[in-house]
Image (tube, rainbow, N blue to C red; front, top):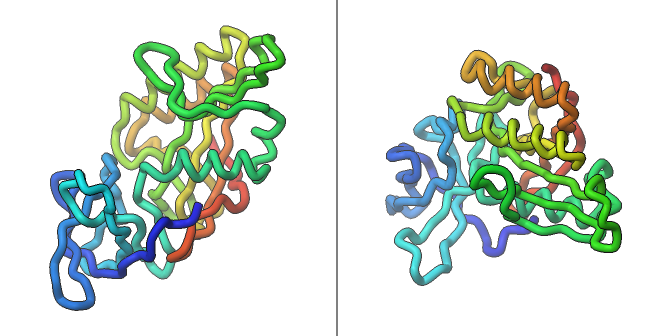
Length: 236
């Protein structure tokens, strides 16, 4: 996924009210950037960090900048949670996620479950067999603990609900896949953050036993693009 515009480097002053961040530009100007991340951003919001912003070209937008990435101990980390679905979609279409290849149709944000929308639905319109449907949920991962990429970085009842709905799809005869997209390249393994959300970690284990497939992919990040790289082993 290439960034639409050249990114602007800056220095993080603070992240606040969940969706706002004050950033000082090289000129000394302080701007307010939209922080598209509802998590705690544990380990990814230290004042003084080097960050990268993209210009918001939507004339109806209230803020002129969007926070995209930051440097954490020399590693670029993508914090914009509006990006992962597009990154994974592009990777599927390019054949970079072998486990999700072979489908003729890809749709985003399709209604399913209990008042939910699946991030990606893969189908073969020429085959009406329900088993040919593949429900794909995508989660953005930024938390690093020692050598592990971990999710979530805060308690998420919504995330556990998504896992249960994926289990329901398996029970109905469909394929269901949970994709963890690690928007950083300095981790060796993925694991649920049980010390942050024990219920989510337990539900993830139940989902795996119920037949929900678990995938974890890391990313290559630069000031020009974010692309899916290799897989990470999953430790439950």
